[in-house]
Length: 122
Image (cartoon, rainbow, N blue to C red; front, top):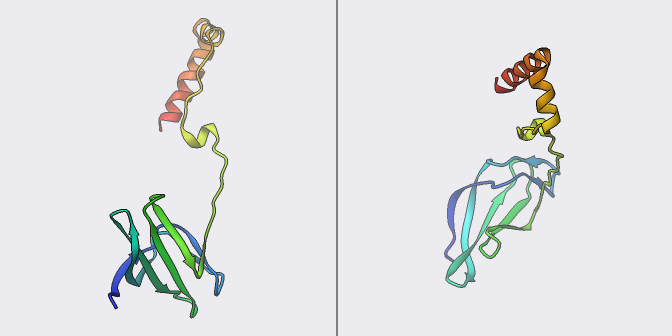
């Protein structure tokens, strides 16, 4: 039939639809791999693997058009949303000309900003 058993690593976080268990990115499975079609000259593969906690089977296909994987059955992709703050992204807040001039003229403010920069660097 053209089915090969390979070692498959989960490309993202998913939820099992059988037992509602979270399966983390990087979890490895023994998966059945088979070719199901082509997108231009690129083969489309389907991977079929069994859940570790229940009798459910996951089916995942390669999606060369979108450079991703398509979840066919047995699982749902976990969506993660977060709001990035300035501290999380590590971006630097630029000072206006007035703020810069105030810091240069006031020795205590200058010292305070130097300490903040040292702490950020750590």
